[in-house]
View (spheres, rainbow, N blue to C red):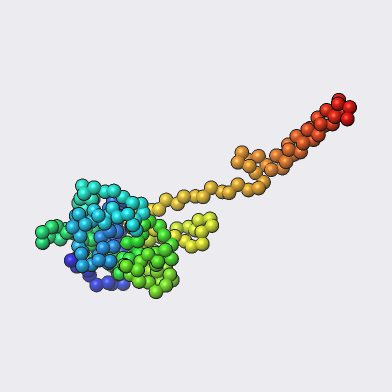
Length: 226
């Protein structure tokens, strides 16, 4: 098992050596998930890790990674000392090293696991999905842990701007780089159309058309002697 040094308030969380890609994040999230939820089967063999990465439940997006995909990513993660190969027994097993590198506790690890596996979420969503990893007493407790992670000198998470119509802010991890903020297109107001023409102009044109039709109707009636 990885050596976990004692926490020291003077230590800042080490900066990631580079931005992690989607496969690497799925591997780390899967390792953390199984370590917390089924410690009796941890560390994981390569076959077990591939199955965990490709789960259909609790994964967004669902992936279909091959054994070679996972093995290549594991080699990259091992080069960065983010993953260890555990020798012994009939098969090589794999253990993440994030506890030691980031000095994270179980509560923090549970939330990072969910963010790695399911992307941006609200604190309420994470609290509801974390029971098998760590039981939070309240949404406020989960949110405070997220705020602590975001306040570090090397933050691991960030709060995203609230989207129109959204009641709660979502949180995202930063291990995959800075999140892309998608600007919502402004809603079309009643004073203009999709072409940008003012409503008043359209109303005037409609009134003119109605007046012309009325004149044509009167002319037709006069011609017919009505």
